[in-house]
Image 1 (cartoon, rainbow, N blue to C red):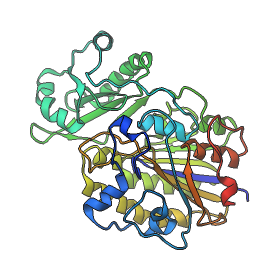
Image 2 (image 1 turned 180 degrees about the vertical axis):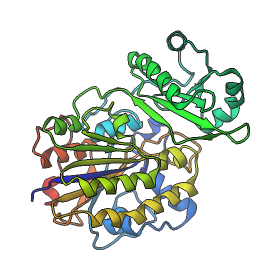
Image 3 (image 1 turned 45 degrees about the vertical axis):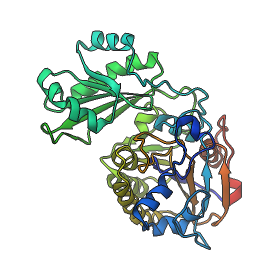
Length: 389
């Protein structure tokens, strides 16, 4: 079989059960998907169920279809960490042995002194915090003083929040680029612009968030494809995550539904290569805010769009659906969780119903893509292509 186009859909943070080392990350008991189902009751995920989602080890509360349309399995994260950047890098073939640094006590003085020197601005915050809570706490002072709000989380992130009327988004992005230069020295995974609007008591983050990621520390499958002039289209925050490297086109999105729309538009005009989409709302809007109901609704919304994607697949297409980590909204934590992620692989000419088991690394996806496009093997992972053709 000659596969000419792959659509890779990342359901950001849709984990399916704790990894064996979850205790090292204080994530025992995390199971993003199954715990949401337990919290809100039956989820209407008929299309993902039909593909075999309920058959994957660790998934509870979904129907176990006798004749699934896709092959299915789960993947363990071999890298150290549970960050968006780490997860995506591993999907593309990079295993990170040392976790990116985190800052549970805020950023050290030397980092913040450099920020003040290079931006000319004092700051507020500098501590781990929920993004919605810190603008509630410091938003009014920020408006009064003009000082940006700096905060972090359990991930390797340097976040800058600013009211759009005080520091407009374009200026905020310039601050983030300056912070990115500093962050590179310390291997901080991401600098994130967090613009917000509103007044005291009703501050609201806007959709003009922007990520400034550290460049991958090695060659990824995206680099290999682009070097062979194979189209690689990044949709959502894919370009940001990979440091804008290895992509022939970047398409930014506003939300999950816009991400599906842009994926469909790309499938309608691009007949070969890799279409790589991240749907971030699950993580950003619901996982981090411990909103199990909102998360459940978002899952159902995406599930309803699956038939539109399947309709656009031709006989030489492959659809891969997976995730990058967990973010269980039912636990006390508001941070990512160390979990297995689902793996669904569909193609009209591919074998359905194959149990791909537990993959040792997310990099199996990248290795399979390398196999399909006949580029040199990436460093990590095992292709599952021969199991399904």
